[in-house]
Image 1 (cartoon, one colour):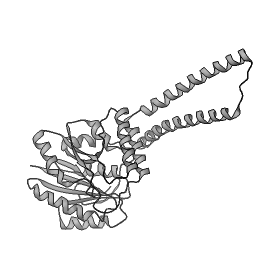
Image 2: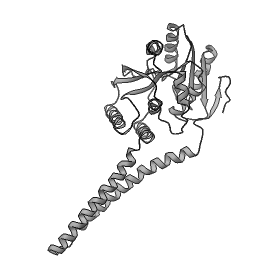
Image 3: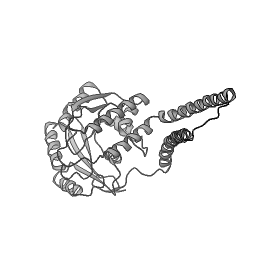
Image 4: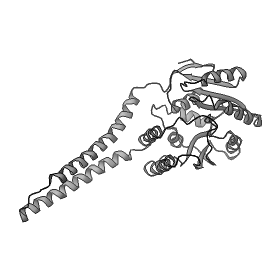
Length: 315
């Protein structure tokens, strides 16, 4: 029936790896009609993650690994896994079991029997997640829905099963600043969404801080919408019009009543407010320019220090 490549980005996941390997091994025994390769991408882990992966590769020939020279981030790890994968079908899942491997048979049936090119997952409930993080996450997805033409579903996970055709199209998008949740929607194809309730980590702690997620959300906004640029332009036009109206009012007031403008505190507040708006708009423009600058360098998304996948150089 074909081969399934399971891509698992790993950063300091030594506590979760044994649980994940046990679970994915159990699922593979339920899907004997498919060959499996399990590609662990070691994203510069500082614990015993890589040593555990190499031990697994000795015990199980299906286990492959890619080890980065340093931490390049999850997006780079996902791209590396896709690039090195050889399966007819490719699935991305986290090592912490927040992406339930038990859904894999159902995802495969959707592709085989219903004709989908990919099957994606989304969380309908965020039970166990901090309320503030959950609130801002929902705000982000609502914002993206309003300012971007690319489909990014609320609660979307990176957990996704794809056909080789889908993966090949995704690999053509080799941009340096990556936001995979948007890239999946941008390339199109027929996608089915599976919903599931939030699952807490089986072991270890999350590597995503609130600040890290905030910066990641900015990546998504800049990568898939130019609305902030339009907003800054309209803000400038609005303040120009407002200033023009106030100038007319001040001139008329002075000519009619001989009343000069008074009150330096109010003037200082206005100057600070308008200056803040200007700096904010410049910051938006600077963010887009910075992304463009990074893209023009054409740096590689990752550097592979070591791998046991044949046919690929360690570079």
